[in-house]
Amino acid sequence: MKAELIIDEQLNEDEVKIHTKTAIAGARVLSYIDHFTTDRENLIIRSDEELLMIQKSDVISAEVQDKTLTIYTKTEEIVTSKSLRELLEELNSETFLKVSKAEMLNIQMINRVEPSFSGNLIARMKNGKKVSISRRYVSKLKERLGI
Amino acid sequence: MMKRLIICVAEAVGIGSFVYLLFGLSGTLSNEIISVWIASGIIGISTMLHYTKLSGLPAYTIQFTVGIIAFISVSLINGWIDMNIASVLSYAGIIFVIMFIIFLAFYLISFLDSKKINEKLNGK
Image (tube, rainbow over all chains, first blue to last red; front, side):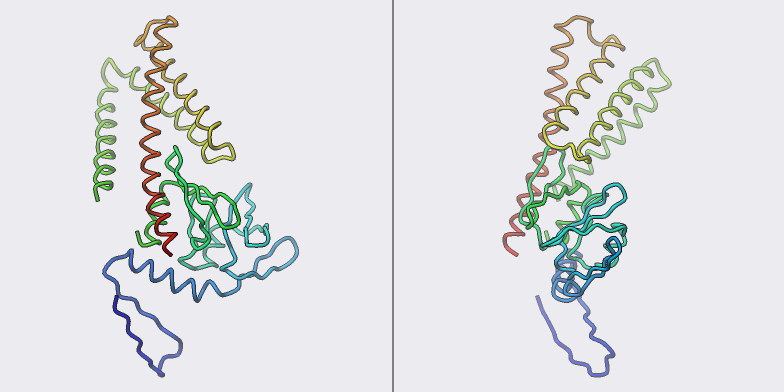
């Protein structure tokens, strides 16, 4: 892969343009960039009556149950009234992927995936949690991984 | 590419079969067609178990049981099998084998996907 660095002092902010032959390669490069930029940013979550600040890359997974969203990080479980869609919009990173109607995960935090008879995949996360990846989202995960 | 081709062909066959059955609704087989759709729908409902907290072996057991009961009921109602223990048990065995093959196909697809994904995850 060719890479070129152009320094332009006229720019108001850093700008990165990626030219790839395939969408898969593009998605993979975007995922790498997000992992080292956006994922280092902080996320503010309102839980009960307090505001919590966590680094985006600390988020391992999140699931909705009975209209309540639980965010699992390396060290804690944060319960919030935020919706899964809102969380994904705030994370705004290729590192995070919605994997079913009720769950999302951090691709960088997957230890391994296991097959199942329903055709879904079970992701074993680095905190030991299991996350079910629906069949319809498996192709999206493969695309993000550059497969 | 081959996997995509198989999926496209399977989807097209599924749609084609459905359209063919729609034409059959106006004929003498309409009750049989509707009863098969109802049984298939009931199995579809039991598939929802995999999206609840009840997953794994209990969900598969319920799904298999529901499927076998649904199709035996349809067969008895439509007169496809005789109302005796031997016929019902042998029919249940056939349905079990068919459902098992379908599940095995899903497992194989998910096994191949998991193998590729794990290779990529280990290499990252």
